Image (cartoon, rainbow, N blue to C red; front, side):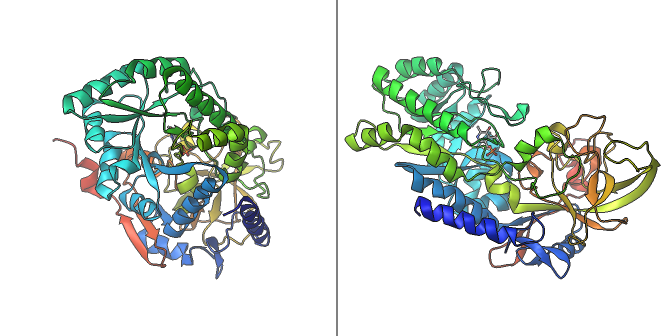
Length: 492
Ligand SMILES: Cc1ncc(COP(=O)(O)O)c(C=O)c1O
């Protein structure tokens, strides 16, 4: 698709979105029918009643939509694109299968994720493998599977990979991960391209490593890699990333004679967790940029490619750079907005409070206690992540009544609002007036870094997952844990 067509498709979806009454609605995907929240035409409240809560509901159609959106990057660059889904974002087997069926390759981060990818049927050349602390057995499995690239975190690890490949009598495909000091304005815990972060090696180390190992019969030095961070609000970081990688690629060629075949710019494209139209009163201003971030990956990559275009295109044409592939490894932008988490209000209480600047007349706090806590949405606690919350039963009702909403865990931090004046979330969450126990709520954009990080803390069952198929059928792709699951690995 040409670049102009991309712009007009985006303008169309922008204006069609504007016609909808709530800014979180997405036409033909997540909307209101018969007064209830629907996803892909399926009634969320009925799903909650049938499967119980908490419940994750994913859309197969949206997975394909997001992958196709990212694949548009190929039309704005002059080399091949390899799109690898970052499995760490969500790796329930049914989701990995949906990702594979949508024509996407995969990035794994451990021997466990590698095993899952192979089990789903990804071929070796569809897999890349990241990680800071790989073990010999993981390297052996990756080499035996002939994966596209093991992304090397350090010089020590490179020597380990060579030794392991030698021992197996094979050649390992490798790509070196760089920390080039690119700063993003995302959450500090999500920054990964700074020297203060734990990842990768300095560009000079990579150059020395390539010089040292270029004749090794056990290593195929294929590429260089970096990942700026997750939920990057500023598209300009991709221009910096591509400039750094391209100039390193040229340097490696000039100084070592090694023609690397790919550059990998990582993932990190943002998801719009908060709409500016959403009247989320008291939302901390300094967090808005990150949670409202919204740009087209193909726009960011178009701009990034312009920065190297002249040189890259003439080098590719003249053959001084051959067979260049651009790898991207997004997780969040493929999976976050494909899912909602349904939760039931299980308890209600009121507490006297002092009036605040935000709520001058408030003398009572209304507390709603749900069945979804940070054991299934860990980022709510670690990064004070914001998930927009609505009533699935009354999405059209004015969401203007302030509540203190909290999860079920025996932990004071298991709340959906700002505690102790940290200013990282609103002080209250807005829902319709008069929410009572039994009402079903929905948290939006819950597909990424949720179930993938879940635990059974407090003896809580991991929740079920349903996937709405492209044809409209609803399939259970993960059952709810039971008592046996709670003790399955215990020896007693
Ligand atoms: C190396 C690497 N690649 C890709 C990703 C995926 O990032 P995101 O889910 O923000 O696209 C991550 C996540 O932090 C990562 O560490």
